[in-house]
Length: 149
Image (tube, rainbow, N blue to C red; front, side):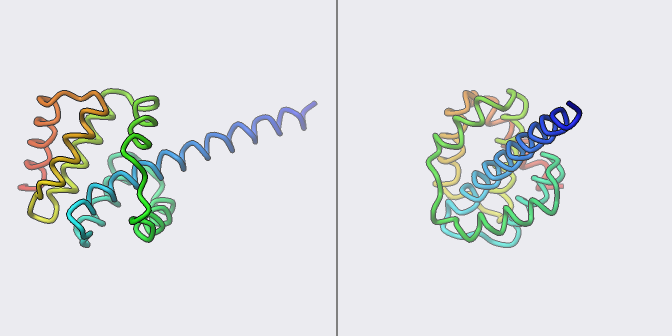
């Protein structure tokens, strides 16, 4: 009986671990997508993605390194925005979605210039995540203020 309970607990923690990795992969993929929208990813953007995943979304640094490196290698095999947003809408609170939009703005702004494709991507993501233009604009302002400081 004790072994059965141990196995059940082990399987539950294994399922949670898989879910955490899926969260990390989706966040990383979306951030890479935002950074690569202008056709290139520079070190500032990679560092911003890494620090955001660790500091803001509280992901494990070792797992972030692995998933980020894999994501950059596969950046040309990106998923559709619907793939990302359907999962995020099901699993993220409104506050966490706003935080994600703010982080995406920080990544896009980290190279010092915003391309039309980048701002269009975030505008489309905000719409797919049911975030108003006002809230998305406020997230952009917060991101600009962080970068200026």
